[in-house]
Image 1 (cartoon, rainbow, N blue to C red):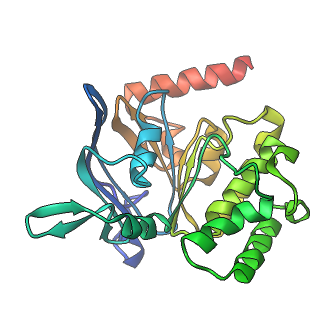
Image 2: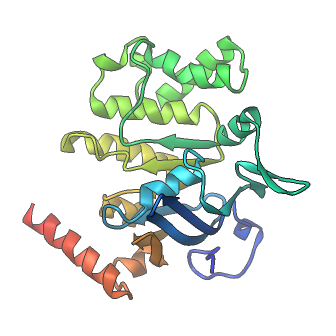
Length: 273
């Protein structure tokens, strides 16, 4: 059953989910990647998803952003069904323009930065609001500069991506997602492509965003970050949610043997390093 609270507290207005995932399945031919995910996420909640490679974490995020269309199940963002609408004879796919409007409310930061190499840093951030939201170019420029200040890169606004370090490019990617003023931010292993010395600068920006109250779903291998920032941590394996709970409980005393084994292996690897 969906869990709508990280700590089992009594119902309140903030318990009304921003994200509701119901019986979500995703298959690629015979490969069954997601096997019936039920999950609610409240406004301003920070949820980290951990688990071994191939457990379905990234596919779940890609379905929430509708990069991947679910094979079965429904996803609701702010009470609106994602990617579909009720027709006379059942559910039908949304038109491209309507889907783009829905997806504009969901920011996603990928493992790779995916910046446009031929555009400056500022232009990379401006393009979404101008093209999708029809924001005036002058307003988009001002928004881009404000966000570059937020991520500590205002002095790089006229630089091109190839002139930046990996950590700087990822901070630009975060600013680009925020320029759409999303209700929800998704992070898919946002630090995994970075050299170790650059990881901290990206995690600091993410932590500041969390402190500002942004609703966030974070797929990560950074266990300490997940413990420090999250309201709730979810452990996935084999396309299912195996266990979830507050980080103080899940990291200190996981209940499921699979979670126990995973965290033990991660801790041993960290100790060896």
